[in-house]
Length: 105
Image (cartoon, rainbow, N blue to C red):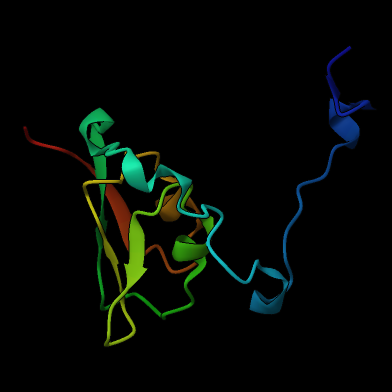
């Protein structure tokens, strides 16, 4: 039997916030990895299409590294020194403004 936290896998339900107010107040990462440049691990890199971005900051809130920051104009940007290309930002973006592309090295 597949279990997930003591429940059958079939009973497990995804947690989906109903509004932006239910998201955390700060990014998931508290900056612990600021001393570790993790960008060298990356195979795919996120690319932001500002024409699709609605400045909801969900990507910033869920980034597990301190790689996404908010610019003065309110749009987000990626600090590729810290981005390890996990794709969480692209997966969480409600408007699909972030796409993952293979990085050329």
